[in-house]
Image (cartoon, rainbow, N blue to C red; front, side, top):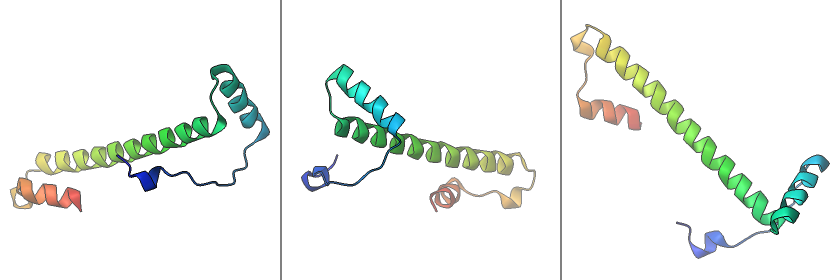
Length: 90
């Protein structure tokens, strides 16, 4: 959840390609919403998707490393679960 001060809007300058602005305007006219709301939602959605992609990419890498470690027959390199969690967090 965001604090009141974080929700305060700040004006920024933005240059968009004309075709994209036309698409936004057509969308806003169709659904009776304003440009700001569309752009805010688009940016928030993009950031959320990028964070999810980074998380799943990191998780995939960690899973492959764990599988490789578990598949190896070298038991001296085996770590405790706490050590693996600590390594993944850092």
